[in-house]
Length: 530
Image (cartoon, rainbow, N blue to C red; front, side, top):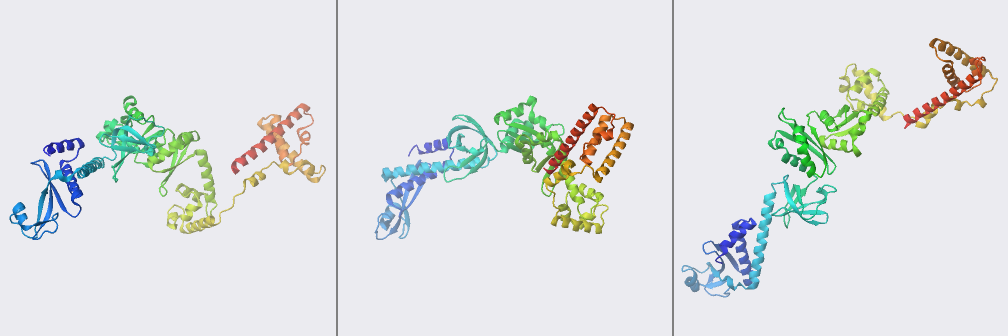
């Protein structure tokens, strides 16, 4: 035991354990060893002496007149002679024990107790050291793999990098250096579990803090970050100094700073977005490189409708919706991106629905539409005070609009099926075949008179406008086919002095024009119906 002081100091230094903790472990170990020999019914106590460098173990005995059990009792004469001259019956005195007499089993027990106490102290030190370091970036060594998780050696302890916190398609081998964010520190029955992450947005922020001095100094702040690990990331930055460009500070000279972060992230693309207190402007910045035409904000649902030009729609949405998805994560808004053509169609339909409300006129509909009442449902949810706050809407008119909107919502008009709409604009020759029209009926003569009159009007107008005979005839032929479905009156109308070649050209042009007009009409209806 003579060198015990020096051994305690050495172990305390190597393990990073307090000296008092090791002394307590030694005392508990010897008490455990003594209890192994004498049983659980005895009362024991161990004390470490710094002067002698020994651990003394005392067995407490009761002072009695007649001894029945020598293990726990001592007679009064012996107690006064060997332990305490002033001892009295009923006192409890400690008898020093010889530790050499404990035996091999007791020594083995003491060894196990010491090892366990030292491990417990190491665990507690590890937890105490890292519990306040959540959010810090550490560097470790890949030690081994457990299933799909990576066990990282941090020097004084181990940490785990779960599969879900790894960057996709990232590969490591045993012995590789790895940097990661301390995501959580959990106290468990065994070692404290230190959980690392490389996919968390906070890891990206910490890397920029290490690479950009302006961020470490507090001049530039990263306000928010969003990531799709391994693919793309966006960060919003702002500067407290008007002379410091936050985007340029993060990019660095020739992109040196941001490239260092990109390399650590294994090639993940990073968009640096200037922060703006105006939510709409910040959303527009987040959707870059797309150019935004208009933004409609709905504070109640935390939604923004972003309108872009048709050729900018793919840029705003990004590959597989990545750009708009990251922008939504970054800004915290639900973003709905639409093209201008689709917005015009939706706006037109919404305005028509407003006009369908009882008591609604075009001027009132325009006022309500411009103030966010886009459909009858919005009007039905509004109060009378809200409607009458707009210029030109009296209380009586407001009540009429409210009741009309409620009736519209309760019984909305039925929409025509697309098939019916296409039938309404079918070419007339399909409805009135030639076989069904008698050749010498009165109606035929009347139709012929009408067509001839229209021909005279067209001839006159064509001469004034200087149109060519073929253009006029093609137009007239279209009109005749639409009204009568006949083709035999062209010679009578155009005149018999025209050459057969010209008549043939006119008939071909007329039939082509009629065919084109019917195709265009059917095509328009099909698009509308769809």
